[in-house]
Amino acid sequence: VRKPRKVKLKKEHDPKHWAEQYREKYGAAANPMGYGRAVFERSKQLGLAETVETLTALEQSGVSGIRRLLVAANSAAADASGVPADRVAAARLLAQHVRLLGMARDVPDMAKGTRSSTLKDALAKNRAWWSHLSSGRLDLPWVDWKKINADRGYYSPSRRAVHIGPKRIAETAIHEYAHAVEHIGNLAGKAKAFVAARTKGESLRRLAVLLPGHGYGRDEVARPDDFISPYIGKEYPRSDLSEVPSTLCGMIADGQLPEVLAKDPESAFFVLGWLVGS
Image (cartoon, rainbow, N blue to C red; front, top):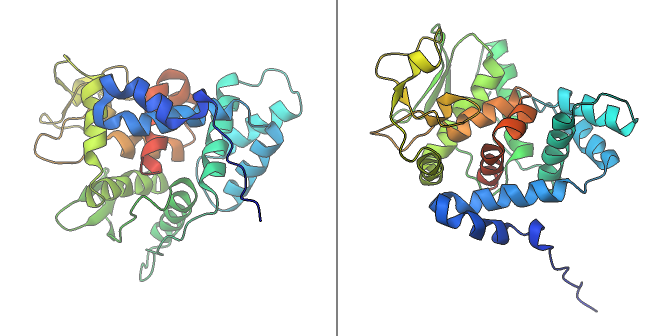
């Protein structure tokens, strides 16, 4: 029986090629950057029919953040005029990422014992999102989930608990759970390297000034760079956490991948590589 012939990747489709291009600037973050860039280059050749098929399956599976991408891909497939190019590119990118991952992974049901119907719904969406958008190389830990009355949710590393407020609960669940994945899976070094490379030479600035009206305290500071959100550059001087995967995962779950890809493509590349454990 003949073994299937290995097809050599085109240079621009090879994560190793791009990782070497990013190595000098990004150091420990070069591998996830290389993976994401390679997926982006491959996605340019993904057919619109395959894109629509993949995104339709994701939406039907309860994955958040798909609707705008699916509408754009469907419109482009129908040769509609005026379809935003950034949305079509983002639709292809996410579809290519999922197609390379293959079958959805098994994610533990963290809603067991939860009485709140809104929290149950958020946890179901959290489970669907991570099941379809992350690889088995990424450790998805069990954490405790708690509803709180405060406006801002947070992850407690010492308690391994996610606290969720009343606003945008599904996207917040995905954002805060990314902190748990980063912390427990010991992946923070890559995100820290990414921020350090992007913000080299920048001074710390107060988030209350950068993002007024969001309730940030005087001690919350960031190096804003040209991130899609200055919050991505938030400083955690005594913690291994960052706001890179969490904020970007939350934005993708909120349907904002087109904006991230158009305004801050390197962040899009990094988070896709991070989601596969590169």
